[in-house]
Image (tube, rainbow, N blue to C red; front, side):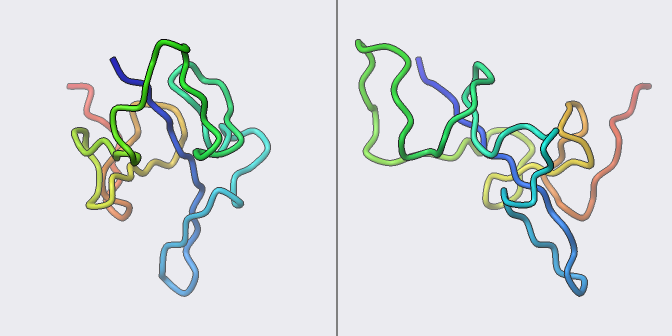
Length: 98
């Protein structure tokens, strides 16, 4: 088994260049870091394993590249709710319901 941690950032365009940062999150947005159980985390480095019997499988964090993500593992959306996530920041389209 494994545990999942998510990082949220909000973006804006500055002279046509996309800039993303967790400091741009609004108060109603999800937290910058949270786990797979929707609990907010202070940061990725202070994360505690969910159970004392668990142990670290790797000496570093791994980015899940198995979903529709960009080359750095990010997904983009106009809204934090699914199903609007997409792997390209400039090519976001709503899902088809056909």
